[in-house]
Length: 328
Image (cartoon, rainbow, N blue to C red; front, side):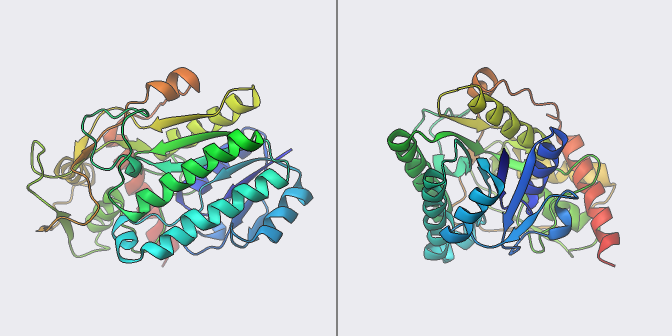
């Protein structure tokens, strides 16, 4: 049987494909390449160009490849962009996901793993935040993901579609073997932006907001290495195949770093004291969000191996250097 990976040419999706191939899985990728790259996909894995909302295409993919499981990454993910273009985000993240879930149900897919986000919590009343805490998104991005969670749970109840919803915290780093990494031009991920600035790809970077109710006034986030996140999906797939009940789980390390702490780490690891300016806060950004990941560890058997900000930054820097060589 085959695993269909939507968005498999993107940052996290391409890491997932490598992990699946290494585990001996048959894989097919569906991606429109709007932010992904065909060269980021593991060799030998078929790429189908298209949209998750194209039900005729998805249904044929399921039939042709004997798809048993779907891992759904394809989405728009930039919080400020979602504030400016909410309807576009609801179309791509929610409407297309609804179509994909329906195609999965009609095609007899047994397992569905959904790429959700900590943004569903908004600005939580406490940290670490647990999966049972209040969901109160502060952006259309977070709302679009929460809507898909609700649809998936309802479809699971009505049609028996076993699923795992993984709520990502801040994903960073790159494949330690440097086969793939964050490659999108104009990316807004903090560590990506900081390493680009350190390597001279940007003249300077901005810190958005310096008077949050945090120790140094800047936002605090829980950063998770992308390889550990890919492993969480493998664990979720094994869990579902073993008959596990549908579940929602956070993916983070349970510790937070401020924006200034991350920038200081990038400066230290790179050896470059680059320019940093300050700007006002961005719409939709919570002050602090840190994961409680006990459920992922206890239920899915997830055992993260790369809980080290210095290592995460080091892999991101190494990937950025490789990307600079590739783009010459």
